[in-house]
Length: 200
Image 1: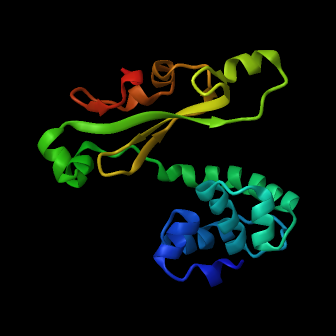
Image 2: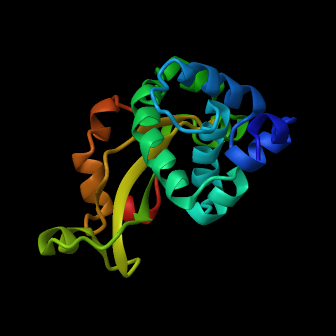
């Protein structure tokens, strides 16, 4: 699979990567200057492999076959790119000013929830079972019956991600994560937040 051969339209790009064609190729161009890896695939294919793993949750054996590489190389590529992408893209997650939130607010929110600043929820991701007993206990989620990493995401009413917390162990309650994540520091008097019952 070659990224440039398979991403011809926005529909193609959204299917494989979760972003539009323009965003995908802009990301490839921006990340090219930071690419110090010596993988045999060109950078567009490397970025596509990473995004396909994130968007479609494909196993490394599948990705290896699609890109004509070994599954161990697909895994190594993913593990190498994730910290770099996280470091370079974290500046894109910003807390929007109230004026911007009001200007971009969808009509349904403007009519029914005019003071809503953010919608928050906690998500859990399965992790490998830690060998350390303390870590195993801290990451075990009774809700998922598995060891997990748990984090909180906040989005604006129009859908822009404005906040992502650091990862907590799956044992942490949603309320604990909200209190300890630093999220509350962004709120101003009068702000209203939407959440499910677990966060209230």
